Image 1: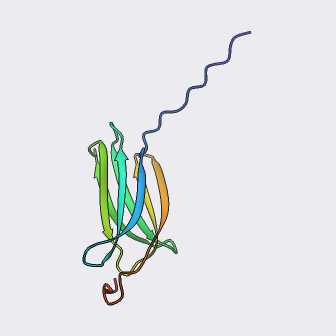
Image 2: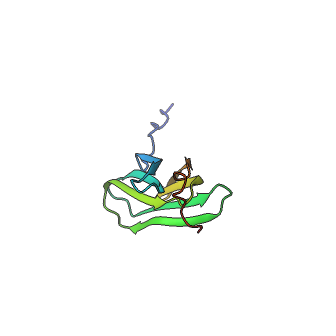
Length: 112
């Protein structure tokens, strides 16, 4: 009886590191900082944001033939809120929900 073929784990070219966090700048504005790693040989990377009800609000990164390595992007979160951050590298994606507290009282950003 022939032996079954060896199982080989698929090689995924996805962001090996992905983190999103809320930050407050020295001017008091609410921002989202997204850190990610682009693997060598990737052909496209995109970072998109949705508001908590699923309305797409921004594409902050859209690169073809991106440079490999550690990357970061920031986005002005206005008056704060709950956001969905999604990074896509080639055909693989990962999402994270992030809560951004509003800026300090008196530093409210204008409505979008």
